[in-house]
Amino acid sequence: MELTTEFTPLEKSAVKLTVTVAQPDVQAAYDSTLKKYMKSAFIPGFRKGHVPAHILERKYGDGIKADVTGSLIDSALNELFEDKDAAHRPLPYAQPQMDTVPELNVTQPLTFTVTYDVFPTVTVSHLADVVVQEPQVTIGDKEIASELAAIQERNAAVMDKKDDELVEKDNIVTVTYCECGDDGKEIAGTKREDFTFTVGSGQNIYKIDDDIIGMKKGERRTVTKTYPDDAADKDLAGTTKTIDITVTQIKTRTLPAIDDELAQDVSEKYQTLDDMKKDIVKNLERSRDRRVREIKNNDLLSQLIEKNPFEIPASMLQAELNGRWQMMARQFQTTPDQLDKIFASDGQLKENMFKEWEGESEKLLKSRIIVDSLLRARNITVTPEELEAQYQKIADERDMDIEEVKKHYADARSKEYLIDETKEQKLYDELYKEVTVKKGAAVSFDALFHYGEQR
Image 1: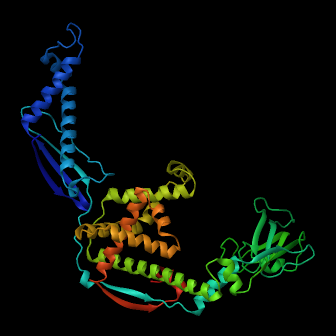
Image 2: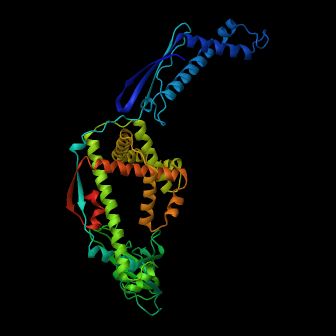
Image 3: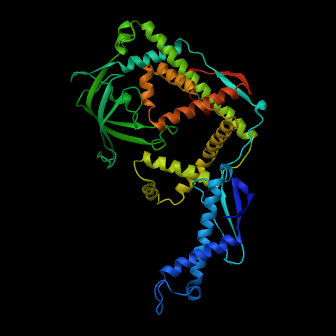
């Protein structure tokens, strides 16, 4: 098919494509369609397959022309998008749209216009102007002690207390409680049975930790509490509540000593406490390094987005927002359609949530596009040797045999994911040689994982 094309860029990475099909191809398509009609048409007074062409054209002319027009447009677009490079192909979720269907005249070429979104074209520059701040984090005695305390907690022995023993701080208690009205009766909907928490943790709605100290298993107590105006729970702030509490179970937690025996209980690979401490330091350093690299990567991409402005196609942003909605539906263990119905009472809720997500989603998409553009521009690939090194790195970090790691990534999708991840790591390694990396502020290990919230 002889085609003439013209691509006109529009806003937000959309294009207008004008296509002209040569007149001989239009005539050939019309003749071919007309012959099909002649073979299958049934008109009273004529045998099937013997209806004259001019009779068919008079009776079914508009339908024949519509069929030819649709067929020519589909064939032309399929041919163009199959041959054209990725820059001119429509995004998979952005089908070409036609405002006006052209009129077919077999004596003339057929011209039609469609608009659609394409993948944004970005030429990433200004790398020399980028300055990345690298937070400084030291792993010291405090961090090791915190990790040891967590291990100690995980290995604590929990035992039931005797029936005559009283609730004490740090006990694990199970209670049944409810709010009571002025008449002393239970307020409907406030009862909670078999609620378990650690006394002193404050991890309960009414903050009854101190109120149950000294109670025995099976004991019932009614307490009246007044909550300050600035209470964290806004529903309780400035109110006075009467709460009926029954203790149904009391357990005590006995922490093991932090010594060689604990280390041996944690893992067969530890002989001494010092062995476990060395492993703790190694794991903390890995966590720190991963988080620092993530912070640096985010900082780098944020600056590249700012220094290389471009627009996101509307369909791409909408697809990302729909994806977040689907993820939210999975979290609610339902379908997107059912989630729509759940929030149907507030017609603006979904729309408002999408608006709230827009900024973050757009930044995420721009980051992906910049990374993808740089990977293609630099033709970054992963050799079999580099992939083998990645397997070994994962095996070392997870204390696994390398063959186990390879088995984990045996299926095509998982392996492709690892290859893509390795490509990105290579890209960032290249970029950090071209941008300026400066030492940032000293940050504690705990604060490192909230670093983005502080800036």
